[in-house]
Amino acid sequence: MNIATRLRIDSVRATTEAGSGHPSTCCSAAEIVAALFFAEMRYDPRDPQNPDSDRFVLSKGHAAPILYSAWAEAGFLKRDDLVTLRRLDSDLEGHPTPRLPFVDVATGSLGQGLCAGVGIALNARRITSDYRTYVLLGDGETAEGSVWEAAAVAAHDRLDSICGITDVNALGQSGTTQWQHDLDALAVRWRAFGWHALVIDGHDLPGILDALEKARQTRGRPTMILARTLKGKGISFMEGKGGWHGKPIKKGEELERALGELQAQLLPDAGPAPRPQPPKSVKRPAPAPSRLAGTTYKLGDSVATREAYGAAIARLAAGDDRIVALDADVKNSTFSDKFEQAHPDRFYQSFIAEQVMIGAAMGLASRGAIPFPSTFAAFLTRAYDFIRMAAISRLNIKMAGSHAGVSIGEDGPSQMALEDLAMMRAQPNVTVLYPCDAVSTEKLIERMAYHPGPAYMRTSRPKTPVIYSDADTFEVGGMKVLRESASDAVTVIGAGVTVFEALTAHDELKKAGINIRVIDLYSVQPIDVDGLVRCARDTKGKVITVEDHYAAGGIGDAVASAVASSGFTVHRLAVREIPRSGTPTELLDVYGISARQIVAAVKGL
Image 1 (tube, rainbow, N blue to C red):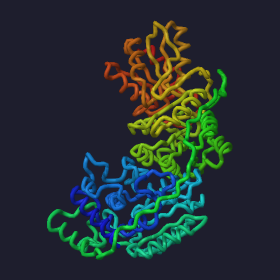
Image 2: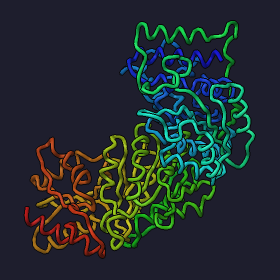
Image 3: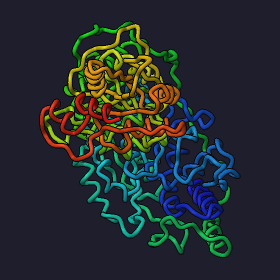
Image 4: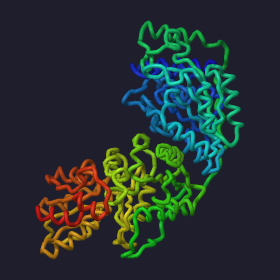
């Protein structure tokens, strides 16, 4: 009981010193956190990243001060450091991020913790570890659809090593939560999703420990503990009252009163806090990168890059068991089914639930896996908040989006990703790759897998000719000059399907006595600034970009940003209106990005 009280005291002091934060939501979770960290979880406070330690995800990330307080109580942090909360020079940020070694994924965008927990639990299965995963949710965030995506996947995969605890304090930010203290209504929902649901008093330590024991003994399904709590517990003027969300206690009389009430709850002679029990560690071989032994394609073969993607991840995974694949019920279109056929134990099906697919990839990556989640590029927009949080977490997830642009043809605009490059480029640490043929796809998959941080590959639906050989090399941040002469009048930059439109335009213009330089910009972020500036200078500032993407945020903007400081401007060919159904050839021309349109633009310059 004293530990829970000390966690409240430390949380209050930290938020008051910061002048901001969420002490009330810390107070409601104090007994839950105390029970987990000092009676239930097996971990070594000196080694938070031990691969066999139980994992804790604070999905209600605004309760960060109580997480920091628990690690101070365990001895990893100094208690004096807690009052640096939210300072620029402190890693104790307002919501947890992996700047801290005991934080696996950044949280604070609600509804994401359970999705990440699914991936962390899948990783335990991958490495055959018996570590358990605990996720603390707020009752308000269970309104998020992503929570129920995670609930469905965890039940389907029979993840009995995951235990969720919902802090049901009945108060959200602006008012009461959806179900308030009707825990039976919540329990019905979790049971309907196939979970073992337990209802308890969240301030009764023996009851919490009993529920955690029952969760540990449950087989074949995950457990959700629904804990009835009071927001602001232990502080009379805050306990169970609205209007305190995100509001710290004021220094002076208000703080003295709160601390006085909490300190009066400390029991005498209770002894020191029990020390956490470290896990039994298993020795495993050090992981090593895999390499693809030569390409399987020949010059002139006609292969869609989406097909080459599936074959490449399957081949690469044969030499590295960290590589896993996730799907959202489109494996036969993204060709990730090739991975499933080769490595079924490392292939995870999320069904049509892109948020939990990316969230689970985040959890897997946080524990050392190299996950490749893939779906149609258009559907990744549904999971963009997860992608944003993966970027904040600096996680090693490798996303792939297929069926991009008007080149998919007759399916129409709902299926045509025309904003995905902009979406991914908006995150400053996401690598963005866009290969044009099967060989470059293969080689970039290998680079992508071992390049640090989040990455995205855009693949295409149409078959395209193989133009590269095994001797060609590809680097993150590079580009290829495919056509070049001393008399080039214009530099034309494409990527993916528009590379071939640019090559066709080159041949047509050459017949008319006009030479153009053609660039395959396969790395959109980072981008080869020096190479682009050199080409712009060689063609006296005449630069055209052509992309199967909307004008905002894609290849044109990337190139313009790269060459602007050298005084060059860019003429951009891009899709500039909502497209409609049609054949790929028709659509490329109608929306201004065909070889014919490139020829016209070059002549216009």
